[in-house]
Amino acid sequence: MASNITLRSATEKDFPAIVQLAEICFGMRYDPPEIENIPGIFPIERAIVAVDDGQIVGHTVDRVMTLTVPGGDTVRAAGVSAVTVAPTHRRRGILRSLYIEQHARTEAEGLPLTIFTASEGTIYGRFGYGPTTAMNEVSIDRHRAEFRPTTPDPGGVRLATLDESRDHLRAVYDRWRRQTPGGQDRPDANWNIWFADTERYRDGASTLFVLTHPDGYALYRRKWGEHENVTTVVELRAVTTEAHIALWRVLLSLDLTDRIEASLTDDDPLPHLVTDPRLVRVKGRYDGLWLRVMDVPAALTARTYGGNLDLVLGVEDSFRDAGGAFALRVRDGVAECEPTTRPADIELSIDTLGSLYFGAHRARVLAAANRIQAKDGAQLAAFDRALSTERDAELGWFF
Image (cartoon, rainbow, N blue to C red):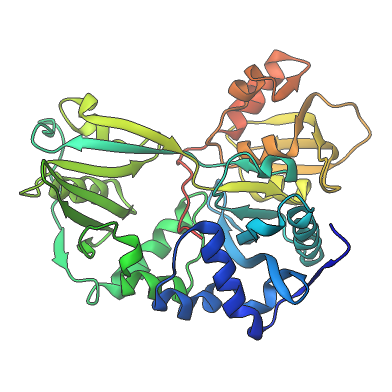
């Protein structure tokens, strides 16, 4: 980093300048409810700023989150956010310096994982991050979509207002995130922003409508257009299969709606519930969450596995010192992992390990892309099977 630029911990006096920098770098304006609640999500004392002649020109912050991993256990993870460098100060080593300090603090706290939601996909691989969840943007022709005769009709959905459903949304989300890899505990301040339903998130559409079910909920907006009317499902959380079907039955029966837009995981059953699965048309695909493994043994022993393993992983980490050779032994889903001097059976970079961690990306596919090198095809196949999960990973809430 340039010698005239210094790093330090942020103070409360820095908050207005941090907000201004984020608005400039992300090209948007925060609404007042967001500004009021940001410190409740990301405490100012956990922020790091880069300063040039008294002006804040770089920033990063994190929050310690409780994150669900495959198998339903949880780990403490650093959720990193608002990583910004002023457009006047690019190519001066500020981002790398901020990340060196950020990750040194994470290591000091003993957190095995760091996660974040990336605004750009080309930056963070060099810091050891890999995309670790995958979502599909879908569009559904509501007029043509019909449920199969064998699709049940569980019922139980009620119309609700955002205000009266607050406690229900919180309770269902907490149940949902405890069974979903990638789901995080959700602070009150984040809920406060949702309940404020600020203009910035509407994109010209309505305020939020709410459907509730004893085991789920759906939040959606409606937008009237010159040629078609669109309903956008902003968040749907279903703890049970019955809740998922019941909520979608109501959504696909909304009058005065031509098209439904939503985001689905790869194995969402919706296309198989309707008579023509082509009507659930994929318009795009995006990563919801990126992950970096900070402590390989701690991370790999925190989750469960779908098959037995006994091999050595060779992990390369060019940014920190988390790499090395690790003996990974799995029996009945439970892993033991420790450093070893034995030669590696499977070699990969730490960002590739991050992409594999939640099971959204397959080892055999990444091996075909030369992201993984394996001495033995049978060991690669076993590694691939063991990392697969019964439930799709999904980001709980955007940060």
